[in-house]
Each structure stands twice: as C-alpha cells, then as structure tokens.
Length: 216
Image (cartoon, rainbow, N blue to C red; front, side, top):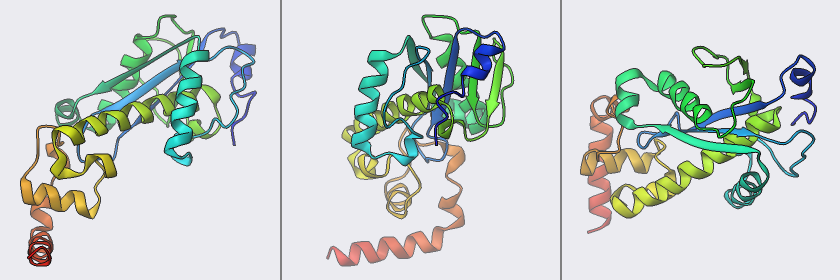
C-alpha cells in the first residue's frame, strides 16, 4: 500500500525536489526496456495510484493522463533491444532510468529508484525495494513506463502481426515462443533472450506440427 508520507522523510532530510523512477519490460523477449521518471507536487494525492502491475490497462491509462497533467515534470526513456543484448538487461534498465531522469525539465535533488541498485546516477539516489508499492513518485513513474511500453507494443503488432505483440506485450508466452520458432526473430527481438529456441527445439517442433495439423 502506498505511503503518502514516504517522500516526506527525504524532504525533512533536506531534499526539496524528489523524483521517482521505475522501468517496465525487463522480462519480455522483444522490444525495449522503458523507464519513467516523475516529480510530483508536494502534498498531491492521486486516487487509485499503485504499482502499475496491480492495475488494469484501463485504470493505468486513466492514471497516465492524470499523472502527465499534474506532475511538475515527467519523462520516459528507453534502452533498445540491441543495447540489452550488449550490456545485459539489468544494466540496460539502469541506463534507461538514468536517461529518464536526465530528461526531466527540472533537475531533482534526489532520485528514488525502484529496486535494490542505485549506482552511477548523476545525483543523490536511494534504492527502494518494492518502491512502486510504497512511493507515489515511483508508482507514477511505473505507470508512465508501463503505458508507454504497452503502446509501443501495439505499434509493433501493426508492424509484425504474426507475433501477437498486442496480446502478450513481448513476454515469453507459449504462443510468442512458438511464433518466434515458426517465423524466426524480428529486428525487435532480444537475441540474448532466445536461448529457448535451441533448448526447447523438440517441444517447439511438436507444438508447431500440432498447430499446422489443427489448421488443416
């Protein structure tokens, strides 16, 4: 449950402008990892705000509109599939969060970072484990990131409809894995996430045969 006074402890410690940052998309096989950064006005309460993973798509979209209207400053940034393959998903996620913070129109005094790592940020930073469930600013950033990434996946679906991105958002569902096996990876797939193609080859081949037989 969000603690509406969570940021207050840091203001009492002398930090005046506090941003939250979080990412979406660490687990998918395809697409970027997207990070949000958000500075909310002191004392603002956004009804229904919570960890983006606990909210319906409709609720996230509504909160996204409210956050973007009421935030003092907000941004989203990403790391590409190529960057994820080059530096690994953890480093790419941190990189996206740093980029989001750098993109804020107002420079914060402190960044509250969802997770347990706060290294190499160009300002004071505090890692908050489960931060999107306790901090309003981190929860807001999580919604910015999630909604943005889901919209990007809808665009990917238009470009590569055979993979079903609009439905699974790039996550490793059975259907998604089978589509990658059947059609091969597209440019948006993270090559370092595709070891299942070799590991599960026999299982995938059997599933593909079953699919083709069921379609005549």
